[in-house]
Length: 457
Image 1 (cartoon, rainbow, N blue to C red):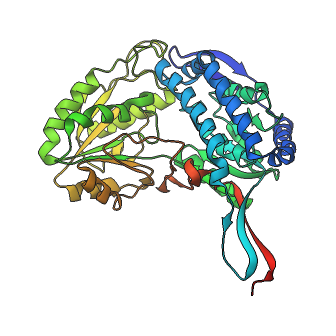
Image 2 (cartoon, rainbow, N blue to C red):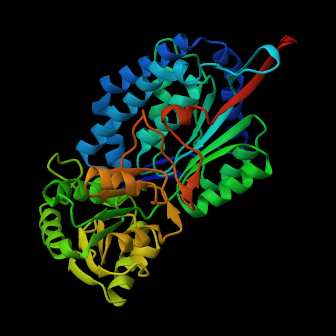
Image 3 (cartoon, rainbow, N blue to C red):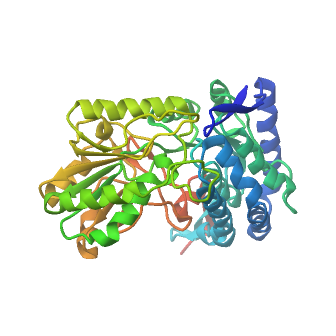
């Protein structure tokens, strides 16, 4: 049973029957059967479908966005933004897929030799709850435009979002049946889906622990996989940073989606000469945030998605305070309904404390002092993760520093974000492979070499 719990109230609002083994096989079969017809469609024909789906999302935004608010607590203004961003991903790949997948001419002893990029088949997307629409379209837009079909296995706590996404394709003019299927199963049913021979590849976004399991199962079936896992992303603030420009974006980067983002600024590493000034300004900025009902347009920070996540976050905060960190604000579970956690600021943190050694998923900001830029870089890289990073300094210095930061994505003087035009993904224990941009669409294609004779003379 898939249970929908409103994190604002803590009450169960709906239960949806999960699929059994036969139902899982049927869903995968539908996507696999749709593949042959879909792969034969031209890029223009596929683009027409993606554009129709994008338009439908924009037209139905007032119906779609509240699903996220109800199922995982995303504030209304962020939910609306997410639906629009998902539509943008569909539009981007509709426009650029043919260019990204153009045949690559390579010289050889053939009369003509080249590489063409062909679809693989039905692709399984295993996705988390924290950005139900964006992560779904980050996965499906490039996969579909490449000619694959998609099986969407969303987190069990957001089944209505999954159904709505599949419904967009079912209801859009020109979309053939079966190219996007929602697989409503509980977590134990995922392994059978990965092992089904009709699934040709897997895309996974989620925790490091779950990612290692998915990768192991996929590898045992010799299937390609892309993993976007957790992060403990550093945000480096050097002494020459423009603090007036930095405070607002860093606040947003840490607190967006109630801090429940893999690419949020998890460890804010500040060079000593500006440390005290930064902390004072940062605390003032955090104090202005409104925590409350995510259905209220004035709310900046809604509840966490589940109570177990809140309890785990609180334990991380307590362990860090016990180890000597200073709790400047927040840090207490409030009374009342729902899974709220206050905006929390910890300073005097060292990189071996719990909130730095582990990924934190919630509105907890952590500030670490570094005596120099060199030490800030060393602290930033002292983590098993390598998803994304940001640095605030002069543009030239930040760009030069990016080469030494161990992360798949580095932003200089801005917010780390995902963008359909640019590839994203991690290194180390943050995963492998890339999503988005031209790199993302190349993950799930057969780069087929074609050699045409006779031998060139």
